[in-house]
Each structure stands twice: as structure tokens, then as C-alpha cells.
Length: 331
Image (tube, helix red, strand yellow):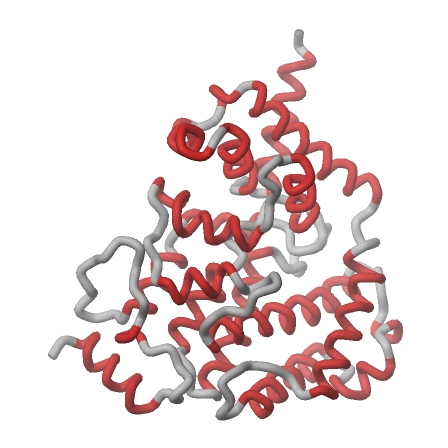
């Protein structure tokens, strides 16, 4: 018996009846010979971790664009925090930790430069629209390496549905969906306080009474509540009390931080960069890297341009935009 089969048998023995078992995956779009050591979900986790799109997350905005300080979150550190919270919950509920980790690591691969600002710009100017969860799915199915990563159905479903109207089909995917919210609410509070946009005293008192005053206390309260509420159930959720406090805190963040934390000049700059790059490459389609020509022939010019811009880091998008503008001004 190979090592993978021993792990699969162990999963069947110790995991919850509600867990997604590696041996019972719905499989890959293109069938492959199985690894002798790793389960299918472990292979997916490794493929995501080693791909270029994952590495680029370290230079993509979480909330604050090019902040002056070393300790602000990036899209990569957000992803790692989501993964840690998700794995804690999955292990406590005896669900598949490898599947959970793979979904968590891949859920934000499709984020644009400049965070949700870039996403909104592409969504408004592209006739195809743009949603980062669908772009994350597109990366793992089509773009990465020119052919995608050929991940299992369960991982792709979790990536697609970590946000939006439809719940993931697996409880592991549902864990990532709720952990994403736990992570960004709490670390964005931390960053907003660091940036002097809010203070701890500004947080709604009724939320603090339920969730806790410190970063550690709030995460601990939310995670423990998810575990206790979801134990031995075919779904993942929060108790009414903690869920209401969490939603109220999220609404506070939208009003005080997400809608107003970026200065008007930064907002206009990010808008101009994304729009400028989009319009330039749509007019000069031959300037796209050669790897996007196959995308264009299959999905059209706008999609190829969107894919290219969405994959850029903040600093690359800024540098390229300035280079193109400088060249334009020479003539």
C-alpha cells in the first residue's frame, strides 16, 4: 500500500461524516495519475503555493495603497491569515484540513492591483465585467502556466464561492468563506488603527462587549463560536449573538474605513492607472506579452487585457503606467 492510500484510510477513520474525503473527490478536469505520497487535495495545495500568481500577492494591496510602514497587511498576508483561521476551524471540526488550506491559499489569486479599487474599475470598463473570485477561478483553470493548474472540483468550487450569492458545496469551502470575513474584519481594524483612521474607542461598544476589545480576543471569540455552533452539523455558521456583532462590526468598517480610508488623490491615481493601462493595451493589443495571444484568440481582446492587468502587482502597474506616459510625452 502506498503512503497516499494510508493517508486516505486514516481520513476515513478519523474525519467527520461531513468531511470531504480525498479518495472521494469528484476529480480533475483532466485526469492525472495519482501521487504515491500526497492526496489529491495536498497536491492542489502545493500547486497553488508554488505558482506565480500566489507569489504576486505579496505586492498587492489589501486595503491601504503603498502605506508608509512595514507592518500593514498585503493580499498575501491576508491569505495566510485566512488559511490559519480556516485550518484551526477545520481541525477542530474534524473536516479535511488539506482541502481547507488549498481553498484558502487560492481564494484571492485573482485580485487586481490596488485591491478592490482595481476590481471596481475593471468591472466598470470591461464589457465582460470583473469579479475577483471568478478571476481566481480563471487563473487556476486557464491562465497559470498557460493551461491552469488542473485542480480538483472541490478546490475550484471553494475558490469560486468564497464570496458571492452561492455557498461552497463542501463544509471546507464554507469554512474559508467565513474565515475570510473573520480575517479581514480584524486585521483591517488593526491596520486602520495603525494608520490613525480610527481608534479602538471608535469601535461600536455593543460589538466590543460581545467580541472583545483586542485583536486577539475578537478573533478567538469568532473562531470559538464558529466551532461550537457548527460542531456535528452539515453547515458552517455563527451563533445569532456573535454573528450579529460580527456583521455590525463589518458594517462599521465599510462606513468608516473601506469607503473613506483611501485619500481622493490615491483613489484617482489608482483609477487612472488601471483605466490608462486598459485603454492603452486595448489600442495596442500587439504590446501584450506573447502568452496572452492564446487567450485573445480564444476569449477576445478585452478578456486578454483584463487578464494581464489583473495579474499585475501594484508597483508593476504603477511603473508600467509611468513608463508609458513618459514615452508618450517624448513625442
